[in-house]
Length: 580
Ligand code: VG1
Ligand code: CO
Image (cartoon, rainbow, N blue to C red; front, side, top):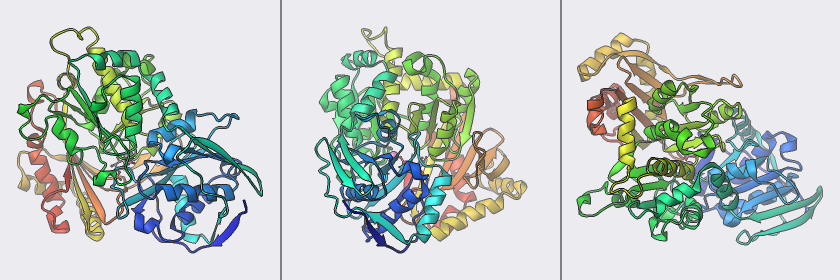
């Protein structure tokens, strides 16, 4: 093949957000739009991570992925990349990409040093919906800010890109290795099986035998909803082929370019079918829901865990996994190095860390911050309130891993009970956890697609208020006299303990005397307007009061959050788009 140099002009707004560049497909389809971002990424990397390197390219299979893969292959060839690894049909979950970078060894001993992941995660897909692209590094984790800042800077000045235009399109539906000869030597495209490496890694972490026993117990019923995302191919391989679950326990496990028209976001609003099946909808007393249910987002790094008629809030989920990991999961048998959560995630994990004497870290939103801690051997398990949970087996959150972790805990708690009348349930485990550690009532209100200017004004108003706590407390007392006092209010700032880098403006916090918290952030993953997230949390350690309905328990604080922020005045919204 030959290398063609094409002149181009910069596009505005190619700044990677919390997790890569996410835009409408119509934006990505503009001539040179994707090309510019890919070339800007190559230019931001050290030369040896491009020339002669091995890169992974794949994603959740959403609309436009197939075109994007061919473009990136041709640009990789032209930029001197030695080989590109593509999952069959360009499918690889985000956690599987991380696993492939870290674990896969090519036939000739080659190892990947990076990946382009093609996904907009939980955002809808299709010709009029979102596409996304992000770059992951040699450790398998998202590019740090130093790199994403450089990529963005490059996008603003880019004048040219390189592409092997006469390289034929690769048939990515068949497993194969194609070799081409270019000006700098050979170039390979290896289309490999999307699940093998990941499944092998999961088998090295969990005791599949004990999970299999649980799944084969007739009293234990199971349901998994991939929301038509890429998780489906892993669910089939792991839950059905390896662990013997019934095919009928899988919902929406065939990946679709438009996720069947749905919103591939595993929460109580968007995972409607699963929520109904698990008896969380109306009139659920007429049937017997499964014991355990779970869902994933488009790229399978998120998880929602449900019990029969019972929702496990993600902040509790990571705390419960951490509290039980050493006993229930072979990978952690020798102990946890430490645990970490993102700032807006509830403090349920903090209490576990304190009780077990574990190192604990609070980082900004987004998985990239956990990676440094893990690389330095400081953290084994971490999570976010946004349905993300994971461990140091890779450098991304991992939806299937979280489900296997829960199944392992259930298998462990039930190992001598499989013949009893009643199994220990998800709800039993969570209630017992609350009784031991106290409960962090938690909810998140999202106001999606509000006017970007209005959102900025609302945030500025909240920052301004922080200069006078007595004024804040006066306003709060007017709204609700039964809410405790704010003792501290600031914008969260993080200094990475490993590399010393500082991330500012990571969310506005109001901390109350009784341990309650209100946090306000603007989303960094949307593709249109702005999304305001309000995180509301209240701690209760009186064991007689941990069983309340969370919306009811949090009612007073929610009212304070909405009125203090002047949500309605700034945005015109009288209700959030999504409550989780
Ligand atoms: C959201 C979540 C954050 C998560 C990020 C990527 O970011 O809040 O916790 O890490 O999505 O998840 P933001 O900036 O919109 O709040 V994924 O599964 O969309 O890659
Ligand atoms: Co995701």
